[in-house]
Image (cartoon, rainbow, N blue to C red; front, top):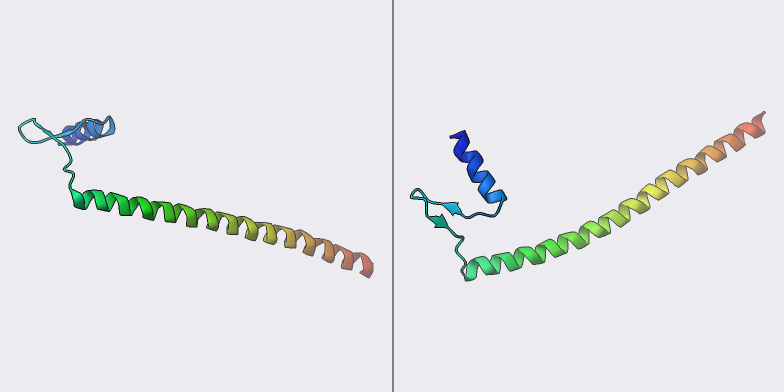
Length: 85
């Protein structure tokens, strides 16, 4: 059983078609529904990539704000300590 799983995985990984119980290759069936589904998934993928880019930009801005305000706060605290002494 484990050997069959491994050889099937190896075939898929290297681009060979799957085989049925008689050793004949099984090719994926293409019909209008699958083509439309691939098209919709491709569009969704493009939208998600765009959103991910926007989220990365926002995260970079938040990181900059957090790190900059932290250093500014440290300087203000040190300035207040300097005045107290």
